[in-house]
Image (spheres, rainbow, N blue to C red):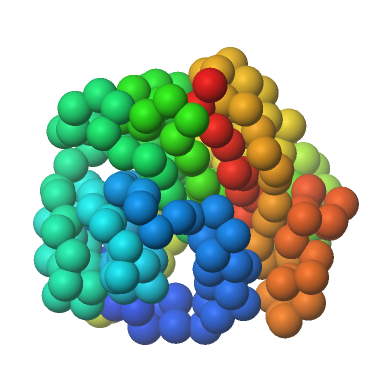
Length: 230
């Protein structure tokens, strides 16, 4: 919690150069979100997607009070402080749930998926991304800095810390990384039908808008899916 409240103050500055990632996310949203949907943005952060979808009926949720406050100010939308593992909404409330930029990497994913499925209507759409275990640029950087033994050990562990320096203070959060195959297995286990999978941050360039569904998605920074509740 302290990590996110501290990060909120510098979040937009730290991630200001994310336009190519956002371009893919926005493309998926344009393709999948309908005007009459009631949407929930899980882990809404400072409200980037709430602002993009401000013409839609959308509610934000974040575990951080500071993130929620900034999201509300940026988007003008209603934002709830809450935990995706215990969603404060009635069952079958939303037509669509979105969660981008790895918000679900920091929670018990099984519990989160159970809750997301609960609040979706039948046929509701779930759109999300998770930090990728096999991000090729991270692997190359790790091989150079740490060598192949430590890199292989990190991949097998599937867990690590994301570290930031905010206002001279070092902060970190434990993160669970996933492969695309794991994501597909999780969705099927929770009775979602996968419409398609994709990735962001493949080349971190305009090419990502063309490559996001290609075989290169297995090696992007963030892997994602569009899935439908059965």
